[in-house]
Length: 388
Ligand code: SF4
Ligand code: SF4
Image (cartoon, rainbow, N blue to C red; front, side, top):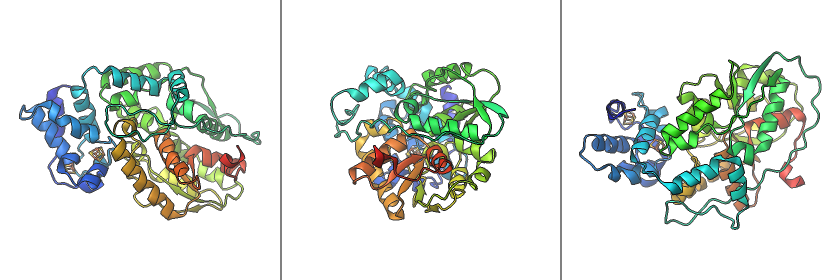
């Protein structure tokens, strides 16, 4: 995208301010330059030569890329695209950022870096104290054998990705089982990272190349099922409409009906909207409908459910203080529901909220949507961490 196209995107902003209240960084700072309207103004000023590009840097870096402003905007401003292109424009070749992105998105490197000494992931590009604990390996889930399966009626791909496959392998196990319960088999593929983190952090071209390579590794017309909100949002943003979030696919394929015959699951549960599901893909009702369809469940709606938790890709590593403030706010809202389980659909939110739960004694369990649905259908009701 050239400067002219970026400028056209910014001119759609009519400066009405409807987005301000939805913006987490504006909510916490009260500073117009940390709001969507302010950031669009800064980008526009830099494009017109009225401001050096470098002066936009700290404001664009403090942006979460959560896209809550897009949901709130009555003019259809594509803020996510403005941010991606402006960050690419700003980003100097940075070996440190490239190394961080490589470590986060290459399963072998990610595994190795989690074994390095120290409890926390070191800070990058920040003088603030680091806040992110190295995620713990997800406990192995002993799933019971599947019975009474329907005949196979179709095939799909499952995007295994990078962070999800390394940190939360049981989310993939649960998704595979749910697919099979609905009569779908999974086509094998060796596709890796989709490039979402690269695109969101100033390496847009690299992110697009990785997404194209991923699509090549999944030939044909079968749907590509995605269980990581950030990946799904990135791929859909590029127009790859074969990609479907697991919750929209399962909802459309009748999983709510199947859940009616599940054993009773008497748990109090709340749901946190991952930004890239609620704002990036506008998927809010399907996961809630699926959760509410579990027999016996007590579903408690979360205050500020679609307000970012501060994880935001590598944001909690690069902007630890703001990320921590948002995590505290999110966790207070979760505690206020009285829920035993909080459900979400993205590995970043999962690991970050799980850290907050651990820090407070681990009374709340964090599960991916696929995990709780499959646990309910399999009749697994206990807290699996307690049995480790
Ligand atoms: S709501 Fe949309 S048009 Fe209004 S100020 Fe925000 S970005 Fe601009
Ligand atoms: S993407 Fe999120 S943090 Fe950034 S301007 Fe929009 S609402 Fe604010």
